[in-house]
Image 1 (tube, chains in turn orange, purple):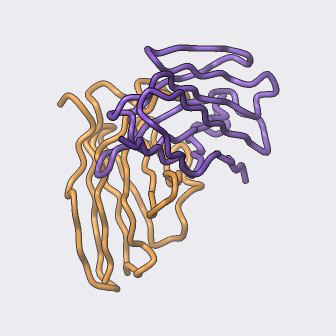
Image 2 (cartoon, rainbow over the protein chains, first blue to last red):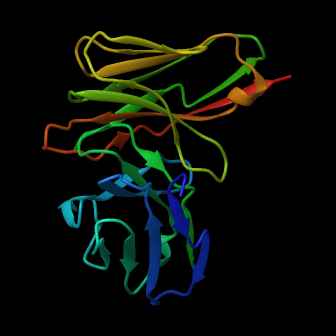
Length: 114
Length: 113
């Protein structure tokens, strides 16, 4: 596609449930990033993939959060046992090469945990 | 960890006025970037700066990478209504050390008619 695509655009779930958020990066982009943005804040780094491997997962808040990119393209962010504090917009971005600051963002997936 | 202080937090200006906002860091970055975010959208890259002291323009936008590598500013000349939005600075250490971007909290630009 022309840009980074994220699904779903909105997700409402109950506390304790499992959630998956999907990101389809720009074709040919090898680097993929996940960020979380709370209301009134800037995006907060979660994890970064170069190809299929997680090159840096230092931003994941705890072990309830996990992300995969099995074929080096589409990525899925997985959140187990969701908590109300997980409510935020989850942004995915991709860039052509590793270390290139020019990240292209999707529109985000808004997660609401009731 | 690294933190970016972005100011001002919000700006109320008249159409046609020039705008200036800046970003400072407690540690150095090797790349500085400026993004704009509209409601319900992801951030869109405006300008990327790769070298200390670099001054780069993109239309009515001008940004500079501070000599100390710990700061950057963004200027918008002759503001128009579509400039409304939230502007974020972001820094990247890179070099295989930390490729994720660190973002500021944003400057909310509001243009009064």
